[in-house]
Length: 193
Image (tube, rainbow, N blue to C red):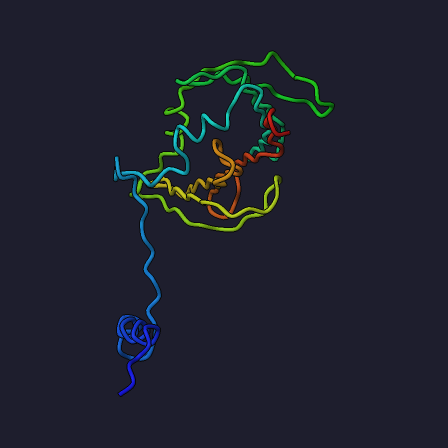
């Protein structure tokens, strides 16, 4: 008698688990990604260390902010100093000709504090892997949708795994209307750009 080859045995071992008895293959169920240290929130898109490694002195973002009235302005966020505990970021509003509109402000934040900006409550938030076209290009990443309790407001935050820190795109929706939008339009890292 001829012995079955190992490949045939492997296939025979896995066939019983591939269906549900009626000839259809069951689709995998969605898994809710909860933070293992705090299951009341969804898994965050980045660790504090990932943000720290990206946001080095000289790192700069240009962010386009659009209000519900359609008013648009550009903000420049620049890392002026960083250490193992946190970062100082200069925030400036930029005019159409590229000059600074008013005196920039500087604020210090800890790395854990920046990580925690992306803490979304599991009770009324979802996390989904999507493809998106943005001002920086086409990316795949995590889209968080946060439904505000007792209102028609939904906040969306799109994070790209290779671009740690602020969302690449975020918006606030009231029904089908976008009432606020913030989008990265340029991202400059001094050691690579």
